[in-house]
Amino acid sequence: MPADLDAALRNPVPDTLNGRLREFGTVRGRAARFAPDVSPFGGMPLHPEDGDWADLAALCGPGEPVVLVRAGDGPPALPIGWRLERAFPGVQMDGSAAPGEPDDDAIELGPADRAEMADLTARTEPGPWLARTAELGRFLGIRHDGRLVAMAGERMRLGGTGGAGATEISAVCTDPLFRGKGLAGRLVRAVIAGIVARGERPLLHASAVNTGAIRLYRQMGFEVSREMRFDLLRTPDGG
Image (cartoon, rainbow, N blue to C red; front, side):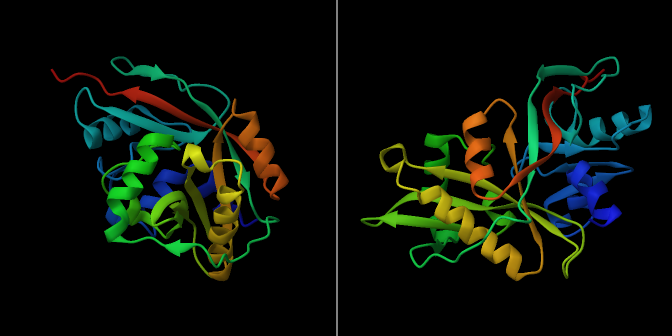
């Protein structure tokens, strides 16, 4: 793996917002934050200095939540005024060896599907889903009797292109009435096929305690590559 891609994978938010998805957030110094209606994620160097914390606070505003994304095995040491509201350990999984496969039943979702996408994610809670999350990448779905019952898509896009980049698979969810039919796995493989066709590496994140999901993704060919953190913080109050 190229060293620059490895660094991006350890610290994905600044790389994404300084690169291919720059229009979806803001950057100040070495800190970066997605637009609040796109994603709650923010980032800064793995070993931040006081100025980096100040820049992230300025991007978010006083007393506002932000999910700090970074490689690591424990919550960050916070400066005075910052609060840790939820410590969330995760894992990053590399899909370089995961076979992709197009699916004839998978349809590409667009603006006309946004209301159903929001409804499905609200009922299944696959992770943060906000008003503009669907704009981040390509999303595929499966319908049953015209109703959207399963979905998977793309979120952060890291590094360069032409084989040097990586794309995160996200929003993998299935209507509870249709679970156990392999729909999510089919959609993940279809999303992988699109990522690989662009010459990129698929990856995904999972909760470190969600052993069932990790086991399923391992069966699909993913491997745990590193520990990650998705810690919910609150910036210092104004004044």
